[in-house]
Length: 152
Ligand code: FES
Ligand code: FES
Image 1 (cartoon, helix red, strand yellow):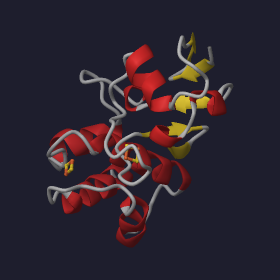
Image 2: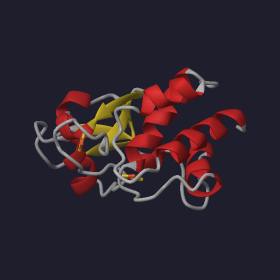
Image 3: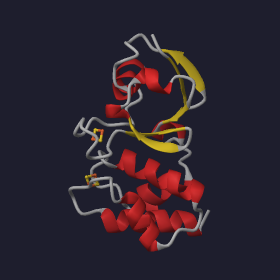
């Protein structure tokens, strides 16, 4: 039974420590921000932050991140009070086409802006390169990240 610190709260999760972190978050804690896409570390839909670093939760065991700070999309903001990045994606640039990949894209962007608050367009494109989007919203996503960086 791993003990996980998620979005500032500590939970004793009932599943095995060997189970994927993604299952602990979605099934046990009912946090549905992280998505099951490929399950093979290929798409980025399951991304969470662990101590501020992007981690693919489908291939990370829950036990491997005990004691570390886990942040899911729910930890960034709410519908009523979205974070700067969420607002840029949801409304200003309308960059959320499917809602499936977007979890990983926003968390990847947060990790980037935390390290590099004023990235160039090229740096944003490079950071988002590992997060797959199948529906052509990538340019809007890049604009959303740049907008959030320019207009805190
Ligand atoms: S579901 Fe984890 S990388 Fe695709
Ligand atoms: S917006 Fe999610 S796959 Fe394109």
